[in-house]
Image (tube, rainbow, N blue to C red; front, side, top):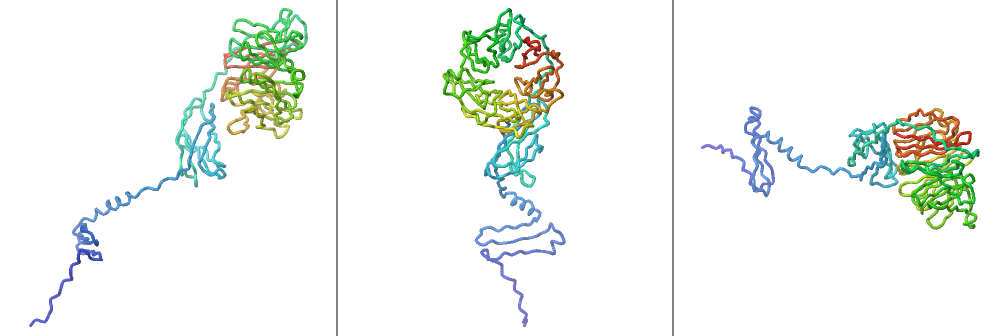
Length: 482
């Protein structure tokens, strides 16, 4: 009798088993890895069984599982980029991030996808300037929110085109002198306003054909002289120190440091202590207006007077320095230059009839005297060169340093004028004239009589006119252009 019991095979697992069985046929695997490798496994409560007989399919299957996971959303710092000033060789940008205004952040400026500036910005908004650009070239810019030197977020891309340079080639006419039979010493031209090539006004006091005048007008064909006094005084007594033309019936002037309005027929001179006895009375030296009924005057002790079309109002500027020059922007904002005998100076701005000091010299070695607003940007003559005040950031910059002999006799003798920031003329009173084309300063070889002193000039991009006097007392013009 055979007592040996037959070896029983283990029971097969049920479909609803709680365990997973891996049956590896290792011997066959080592003989041939591509032979049968069976992974029978059963998942509880599942109605299907998966068998893998080809293990190399696990790799792409695994990749599919990993790549199906969603990518993390990149941070959004609310970056924005705006070009606020573009000239020939540089561009200035306003950069912003939607963060707490008290926080600082690192901003990177990218030009054509290359990082050119990395700077910490205090608060949500700041300004970055890219220099060393080429004139009349296009560039693409964006900014990045930098952390550990890497951009964690970027703004959209903007494209800018720099200004082209202008020609420094000018032609000049010979000096133009009126006859001076009056033989009166001290008559001269003092003020120039070029409205257009065929509409030029010049003020001062001069003689021609035995008659006295204080203004003359070029109509494109001839000079027409005017006596804009109130007839009780002579043009020699009432020289025109400043003039602004609006139209033929609206011309504002300074008559011997007093406001005067010429309507094309007659002149009304405003004597403050007579016409406005309760208003503080001060001499005025400069004027500018956006319209005939919006005219500003500045003078002694920081006094500002405003004509609103009906009456004058006195406004104190906030400084006791004398206001010597002013100019304005296309939206009616007024900039005024004030200085005193101690060498201190300041730049004031008037918006909505309220004056404020936007820049002030730190000592007597830093001061400004003359101003012209070009494309709504104030340009100023200073003791160390030509400066530019940037309204968007409230900063004063040195555009270029003093050049040989230009400021030898003091900055109060220098005039600056031009239609655009890449087309400026800078003149000293006796002999030198420079042109700034947006990239470089060029000395214009002009033969100027060293016995002539220029007192004012204007330049509209086509026509240039400077006016003054000879040491002999004769008035003189220099007219030129492209």
